[in-house]
Length: 77
Image (tube, rainbow, N blue to C red; front, side, top):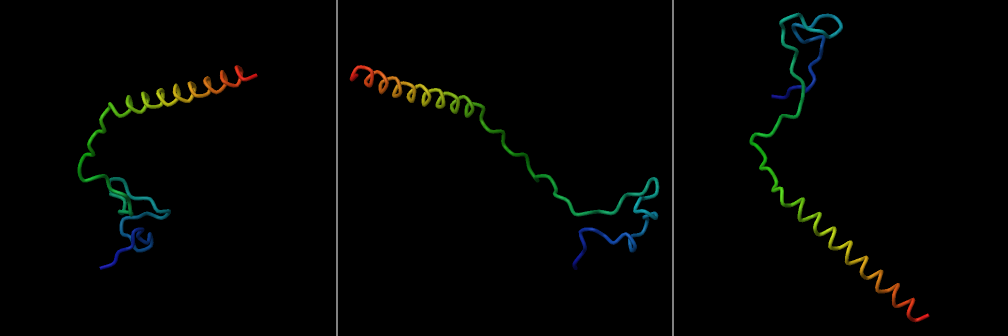
């Protein structure tokens, strides 16, 4: 059986002219995305702290390399 995700307003019972529904009626169903069937697990909070710590370590390492290169260039001159 094939159904249309969007019913034809001319063939849908309960619709008033202009596509509205009468007070108390339920509007016709339309295609939609339903929610998940189960709760998603909450990701661990330590992941954010690890990411920030790694970013700080990498930044400090890059700054250290830049400082060493600049100091060596100054001492060569």
